[in-house]
Amino acid sequence: MESPEYVQTSLAAAITLGFMPGRFRRDARLTGLNLLLTYQDGCIGRCSYCGLSRARELATEDKRTFIRVQWPTYLLDKVITRTRAVDGQLKRVCVSMITHRQAFADLNAIVARLRRETDLPISVLIAPTLLSDPQAMLAETWAAGADMAGIAIDTATPALFDRHRRTGVGGPHRWEHYWQTVEAAVEVFGPYKAGVHLIVGLGETEKEMIETIQRAHDLGAHTHLFSFFPEGGTPVDDWPQPTYGQYRRVQLARYIINQEYGRVEVMTFNATGQVVDFGLDTEDILAAGSAFMTSGCPGRDGQVACNRPFGNERPSQPIRNYPFPPEVEDIALIRLQLREGLTEG
Image 1: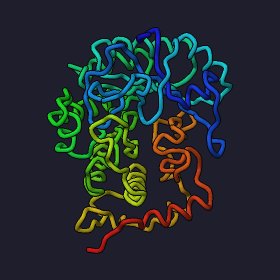
Image 2 (image 1 turned 60 degrees about the horizontal axis):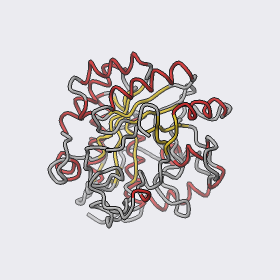
Image 3 (image 1 turned 90 degrees about the vertical axis):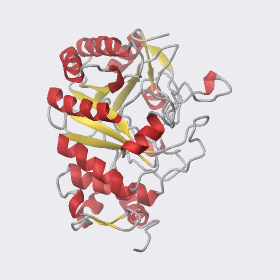
Image 4 (image 1 turned 45 degrees about the horizontal axis):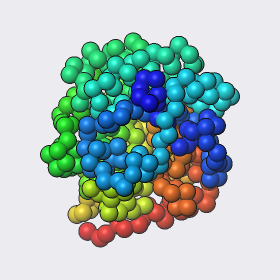
């Protein structure tokens, strides 16, 4: 069961498409369909935190997860049929590569088919290591029908990238090539039609993460935040998640930068790299709550479509990325969380 005939999809998508039973806490609705290319011999990346890593130690393969949950495999034919049957709920589809020799050609084949057979706008999540000529190859993907592209840089600094994705784990990825691919994606798809995925909690300071968000924005790419969640059997399966305070402060800074309300240079950080002042009055932003919603590619209405309900936490935990507008009680909790863990000095 391999791509391009088959794809994996998230548990949330499997429930939404009716492949599996289930419902979402607080009646959240998935609006972005995530598809993942799949191959028997898997991904050649060995990223320390990734559930798809070949180096992951599992008792049995049926325990394999990605971003905390199982990603069941289905015929693309059936996925497309079910997608048509979900009346207006889905606002975008994202096709994600893994680092596998067949993935680029299969990505383009799937994108072209989705363009012919659905009316959804299409994003792609690129594996830069496979792109020998990023600009020319991304132009092929744009021509196939994708209108937005994402690059999962994940880590905030070159040293952390090396530790988690290259020499520290024997992986093939290169920091400089990933950023070159971001620049190429902006050139091909247009300013802010490219996105950078970043994972908070891999060992960076808040200042380092916010500086990286600013770098991406200045290149013409929005950033989409994820909160680290340990996958069993990976080298970092005993790492803690970032505190709510750390995550909330980075979320707020990301929103300020991406909305062009401010810049990292006017923010104030303490001796441990925590942001203690955002350089502007944040009251109206806090009251609106949008800064703490999932950041992702939009639908045609301009609102975030890739809302990934409960992708960063267990449903029993407080929400990190809200898949819907936070309510009054949520905003009150967020205000408390923003102060969590701040140190003096």
